[in-house]
Length: 266
Image 1 (cartoon, rainbow, N blue to C red):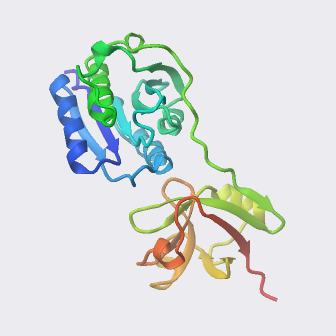
Image 2 (cartoon, one colour):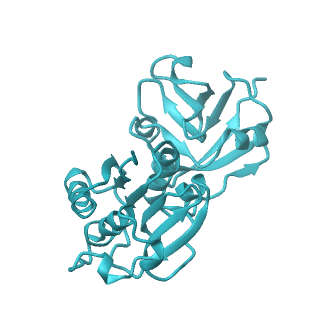
C-alpha cells in the first residue's frame, strides 16, 4: 500500500495561526498526513527557523515541508517552492529560510515562484500568506501538482550567516539564536575551534568577555549552574549553563558577537 503524502509545517505564528494553515492544507489535501513540526520559532527569526529546518527535515519522511518565518510578508519578496535532490518540496518565503534545509536534503534541484492564482486561495491577504499562498501550494504539491505549474523558475536567495573569524589566539563568532533551554547556538563549529586553537581536550577552559567557560562534551560534565562550551546536536558550538540559561546569565541575544580565547595558565 502506498503511504499517504506527508506534509510538515514550521512557523513562528504560534498555535492558532499555524492551526489555520494546517486546516487549509488538510482541507485541500485530505489524503495527506499533516504534522506541525513547530509553531514556536522565535518571532521573525529567519536564521533560527532555517537552522531548525536544516537539522530536522533529514529525519522526517520525504514529503512537502511548509515553513513560514516571514517578516517581509506583503513586500516584493517572492513566495517560492523548492524541489530538493532527495525528492522533498519546501514551501515558504524566498528570504533564505529554505536553503540550508534544501542543501541538507541533496541540494536545490528546482525552484519556482508561487504566482499561479489557481493554486492560491481566491482572496489573498497582504499579511497572511501562510494561509492564502503557502498552505494551498503545499497542499497542491502533496496532491501531485507538478512544480512547473506554479510559476517562473528562480534561484533561491541563500541564508546569510557571518563566517567565524580566526584571529591570533582567538575565535570570533556570532550568536545565531538562543534555544528553548537558553543555550546560545553559535555560528562556528568544533572544526573552527580546532583551527583557531589546535586540538582541545574536554576540560580545557576558555573565556569570552572575562567569563570562563569549560569546553565539555555535555552539561553534566560541569557542576550545576556552571557555564560550558559544547557541540550541540546540530554540530555547532553553543554556550550553555548546566541546569540554567546562558542567554539569561550572559545577557546575549541573536546577532551579538562572542570572541573566545583559551586560558593559558602560567
